[in-house]
Length: 363
Image 1 (cartoon, one colour):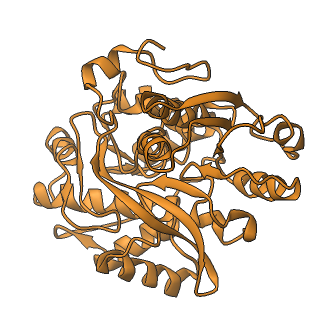
Image 2 (image 1 turned 180 degrees about the vertical axis):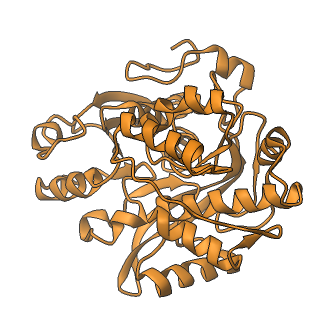
């Protein structure tokens, strides 16, 4: 999906940006930090790339962080979302084209409390940093708006059967917030339905991402989630984007397709700022930190001083439309910062969101 998004963007620009021919070299990290580092070094030192787009996961991005700093090569992340990549330890050569783990889920915490009227929620999330940070972001704002998280369950990433966790869910909560990555959302929602659970489900962006939504059925219908993207965003720009992705690749774009597509658009925007001249890496990096795109599949987006996009966040509901499942947009929170409505200095003075987070700014 990432390769498809990147290819579509490059093709739409005719293979050129700011008068420069774009050559794409793809390396497979195999999802292994050590391999990621080796491949990155090869791309920089053997292939002489001017900019990197990738890798997929935050643990891969963290594995090459020191190398990127020393090699001083600009990198645009199309999917890795770890909070501290653009918070407490920002890499001056790193820019993100997607939100942080918590960025889309702060608004969902407010929406659940204020507009859905939920008072008590149970959380079940993948037991790694991405799940911890998503859950904490939701919890913080939900509790700030009068809600209570009464329970948190942490199944391992490789869980095959969620039954023992589903049966632990407190039946007295108003809803369950499920934060899963990869194919785990498919497994969880299917088993949740098979156990006859009727509590409403709130989801993270990746729990019902379009990339896996096509593999789901009735078990996903009605799930309310949040994200900076949905194939159901009703703008002419996004409609054209979705139609083109469907035409070329036979599926709706989701987190990974649009993330790589937008990383490519960030590159184009920065190249236009420097007239296609990437010889001055510092100037090119400054341009990447000043990306400002008025219209895109996301909507308007610009980058903050830490290299993180400020963008609209949508509250979405899975519905069946025209024979397919889609994330219909219920509400848009405009220009959402990675810090939500909190003071950035106070936010950064607190530790990064973690598995043990209980609420507030002190943990």
